[in-house]
Length: 427
Image (tube, rainbow, N blue to C red; front, side):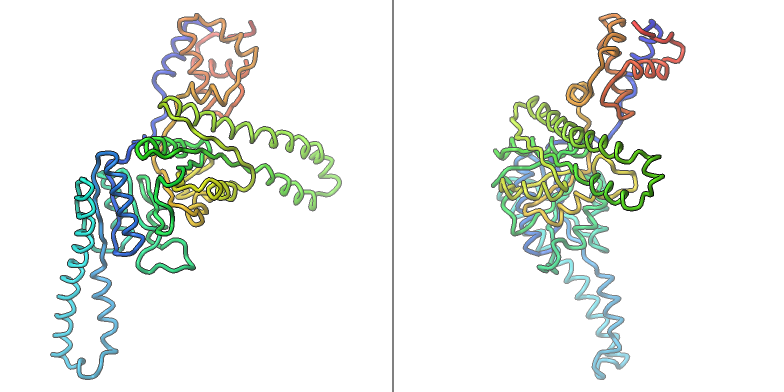
């Protein structure tokens, strides 16, 4: 590799790291939704504990719909008894109702905030109040988007809780759209810290953000942290079985169906396990860098089902996961596994909206291999700049999904990043 190549690749290594929203690890500014329900009171208790442990503050928010009540009252006026439908009586009733709704809903909000403030005072935590008029979920999201909070805590259900639905509509709408991490608390779930904190680790930046949050929280409350990685090696068997039903003899011969099926099975059975085990190894390294021992578990099967089984086995008190996973596109609001876990987990759950990218060298050490020929190419680079060049090539390979760096990848990286450099060529 020429001097020009070294200079160009070095500049790339120094200047093109991906810019992503960073996780804070310690939640200090907690927004909690209040509505007087058992779930909300349980959420308040957990919010206060989290803020107190981090030396932070709690902001309570109650959103009420005065305009909705007013509109509904007007729609029902035609059903009032006859004595109330005279014009003077009707105008009087409107004025009384408006006064009751305006003052009454504010008084109700104040009572919710009084409870929140008393809980915070007992824990030595600062408390702030937000009252908002409008749709419940929209008011919470507007507050979360204001940039003053790094965690939203809310109950899984509200005053309209029912045994048939594990999540209320406000909870679902906030969890899908919130720009910061969301903690969904279940009133029947164990207290956070009563059992292990379990992180669903899938290699995505949001899952690594969830891991950092779990590690920080575990240290504060003295709870062990587990990481579980789950992969599904069985789907391709089902897919090939279905394909086999529709292929005619000519298509099977052209496609070399049996050979493809055999190769696919060999690659997936071993390859997926290796990929997800490497994510756990990265998680273990992140934990070790902070002096924490991480319990790691690799499971196979439908990911959300495998994780649910693990939660029950270890008696988890909190599940932490990325809101979306490795294969999310920009339009996706919540991943399928995350949504299933949010509905079915037996414990409270945190969905990470923030991202954390582990150091490239740490990821590469666990997930990327170099061929002998690629290492020979690198040996030709002066030793003093070799680490910088290696990092640039790793970044290039990672962006293209390579888990093995070959001599061809090294040459391609050189050609793309330093187009005026001479090709490295064989050693």
